[in-house]
Length: 494
Image (tube, rainbow, N blue to C red; front, side):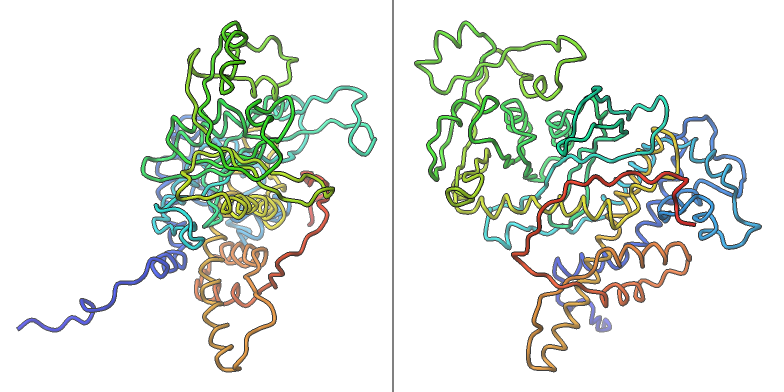
């Protein structure tokens, strides 16, 4: 008679429990990704046969060092990573090793790590929206200041005498423009496109990111007004992904069909016909209110403004049908600033009614919080190189550290909720505020543990779950547009 196996009769773990277990093993997953990535390092090296000789700073040690580097100088970071002076590489050795590595290496490492999360949950089900499991994604652009270097490709051209909003004269600056895509449920960055600040094209970046989404993902992109345009709507319809993109209510850059809508809450479906023949548009626009004219023009010169050229770009034929749904609702009372919000989407009316879009578009703010965490909780702007491609490599590194920390926070949050529920049952009352795990403290604990080499995941989760901050809904503060500049090597903390 076969022996009784109690494991056969256990209840299968829920999707949340399976994902929580995967989050608790996050550092083991990261180690496995690093080991796999260094096997293919020759594909990402500038020099043939790089990293083949036996040196103090091997490619595996260099990768782990890059992941754990903080905001200090190179000397300080090397001392923290290699306490033994006999094992410690020199600053010159670090710089030369880093110069051999392409930024695509860290990009590939990020993709390997993201692929390990196979237990995604459906956020829209918790909101009572959607009949199928949509993957909620947000796309937005952010500028990253980098150290100045003569001949850098990241130099932003400023016209002499140009004034800033505060009246002072604009100075020369060096910036990368990163178009980033975030999963709004896991709060992890899933894709990124780095562009020259002088030739920014956010719409092309969105199309490129959407075209690389695997089939069956049911991706739903939520974007702000920088991504609106008939060419974008046509591409996303063609690719087969969902989208909710904010549009201006009135103005020259708005479709005339949207500009003519009355100022009232409405939900209309528009079947547009796009033509590239101006003569046909002039003779038929009066009888066909859904006709849109898009002339195919080549960019006349380098001085032409990129934003105007990219908005008027059209990639399809001379007669093309585009179906969109336009939703308009009030966001402020009369006299309190911008009153109305217009969203362009292709989502079905039976799954997403008009009243659901206010909450749905509000979820996009998660990527703005992600940018704040990326620039202030992680040492993103403390670069350790002076090469153009090195800046990109370290930015990919910051995205990787952010995603690792997010998974640790998710596992620590589950542990904190269990402790809070147990304490509430013992006391017989609930806490005054709702609390969440402090992300900045998690980054500090995680990087310190990874530098030391003595990783105890249980101790890390216990430490992270003990540091919490109160969640106070409805709080708002005036947005201060003060750029966070890159910190030069001369001004690093010792």
